[in-house]
Image (cartoon, rainbow, N blue to C red; front, side):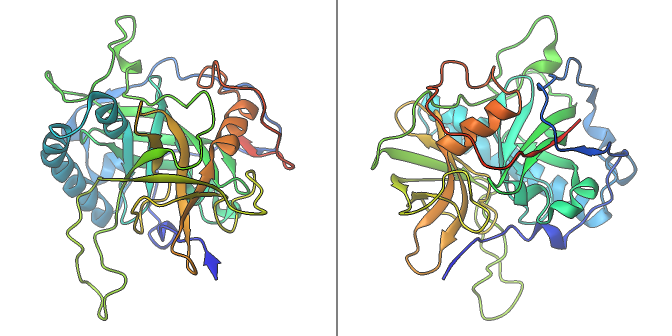
Amino acid sequence: MATRRTTRSSSHKSTQLGTSPSVSQRASPLSLQSSIPLFPSSDLSVKFTGLSKRDLTLLLKKKRLLKSSTIQALATLDPHLSSAFLATLVFAQSEAGTALCISPTGLLLTCSHCVSEDPSELEENRIKWLLFASGRAIQAKCIAYDHTRDLALLQIISAEQEPTGTISNTSINHENPNLSFPSLPISQTPPRENAQIICVGHPGDEDLEASKPGVKTNYDVLHISSGRYRGIAEGADVHDNSEIGALMHDCWTYWGHSGAPLCLRKDGSVVGMHSSWDDETGMRRGVAWEGMVEFLRENGGLHVIEGVEERVAGSREAPILLE
């Protein structure tokens, strides 16, 4: 039976800061964050983040591991693949998924089930803490959510100050340094079948296939795997990933990889997003390029998909846009 492998994020709900505005079904142009407040690393506390002590401890552990392992990973990667690695983020809580930054202004794309498994619980799950591959902590707010496509758009609303000599490959915005985050371009065309790709994801640290609980996997916080794009599943709707992703690929993934970018090996551009797998075949599944592009087009992210081919059919249902 083909099933979605979720991140189990709904089982670890954290107290979050702020009050969420109401949900609107009507899409409107995306307004970019003009100023993102920075905070020192010393502010990462239970009181400041609103996280439980358990989740904060995990955030700080992931942060420490990322800062040490990312330097080693970058030494083995080509420059364009290093960019893909640095633009990938992990959710702070346990096995809660992966995200990618698609704009230096701090716009993030991930699977909707990484934000909230159930649309009815979206309001209480809108604010998230994530970590860039460099270990930099950020707080983000969900601004668009499409349960059918299994996509969500988040905007960074605060970010940890980066020390001098950081490993992030951001292009400094001298007018506003706050708006300089490592990001990945969306491919201007869909991938060809059997194209070589990489997947950058956040495998969980617990072996969920072990005979007893608590067995650790010892995987890195971020893992790069390679494989090929295997096309769209027969009969699948590229705009409906609510049960299982329409895209097929064979990069290695694990629980926690949902939201991981699928990038062309030749240039690092994004052609899909991992979301699930097929129990019968072992084929990894994901959100197709067509679904991602139309989701961004509907939600005002035109600056992100500038130059992209306009040959994508629209979806049948309007996503939830949060204002």
